[in-house]
Figure (cartoon, rainbow, N blue to C red):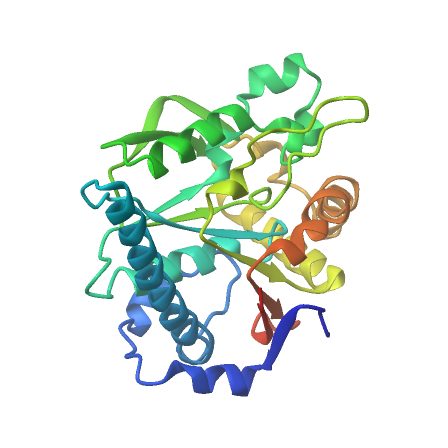
Length: 312
């Protein structure tokens, strides 16, 4: 896949850019960080994640130097503003696993040990609001998010606020937890992961476009790519695994799926994918791919086979 404006790497060529970056994760560490139905191996960490970690470490250092130049020009004390990394991609493509592994690796670099991870799920509107607006079937689409709150969170973080709070989303309850918050206290690096992080906030016809969008606050962005058929297969596999595990809990929002036959389970997952997630991917997520600084293209076996680094 050739992309204009990007330098493309085969897996083997990218792996050579690791240089002498040490492997700081063990197999036990990786087992904790893997997501459902993910197969990330230590070989994948060495070949893909260590060069990426090295690149981002260099980017963080350069950003700090540039920030220091601005502070010197303005005659003010050097500020403490986090470096923000965005991770985008489809449902079931492996964003959460990438985010957790990257967080663990970057936190082991000596000069930026405080690495926070926040997902955009917490900025979904609560179910009661989605129900009032008849948007429950559009959860994950742009209109289901509280973009104003998301922008304010990132603006406060970039301004160096001592503590910034993000809402917490429960996949078990399928809703925002009203009395729980994630507190982010001046991290060196923030990893911000979600379906919508690279969307431009383009408004409907006749409306004024948003003056500030969430990607305005990002220093570096990644997009995890894969063929539609592969993502669909991973989604069905994950649904079937959840049906045998989490959905069996009576308090799960999806408890009603627990007794589906294997055939009905596959059919249900395929229907949800086709009617909701595939539509969102094609209309809102995939069009943002070329806004990312780095695109990681997965193969059918979940391993990353191609890497594309934007030149500008």
